[in-house]
Length: 101
Image 1 (tube, rainbow, N blue to C red):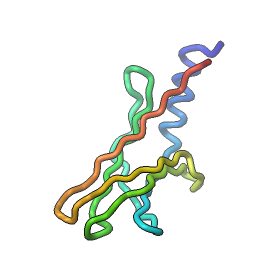
Image 2: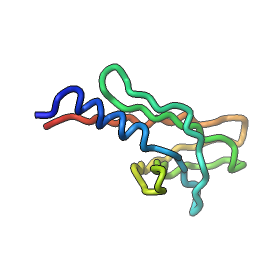
Image 3: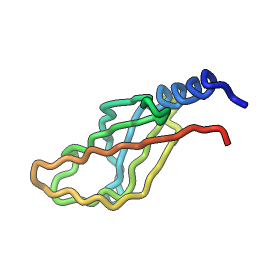
Image 4: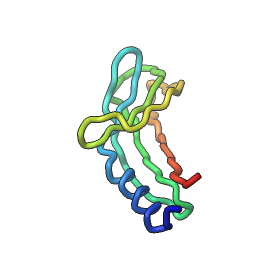
């Protein structure tokens, strides 16, 4: 059985390992800004990103990815998020739970 200290260490390791985010529109990927990496009080890891206006026009984001400092894919999530050409942005959060089963 892992201790609370060990589980918190694993959670912090994952949180600190995430270096960059990107999103897919059509067949291309674009960088997204990571604005927050937090270990929540309930033990979940929260990664907040902003999808800005790097791509103009009405778009549909079909995938969001997180990478580590070695450029290895950590997480990927298929989506279908529409953004109007106006001055909208997209706030997106990954939340991870690490538990012992």
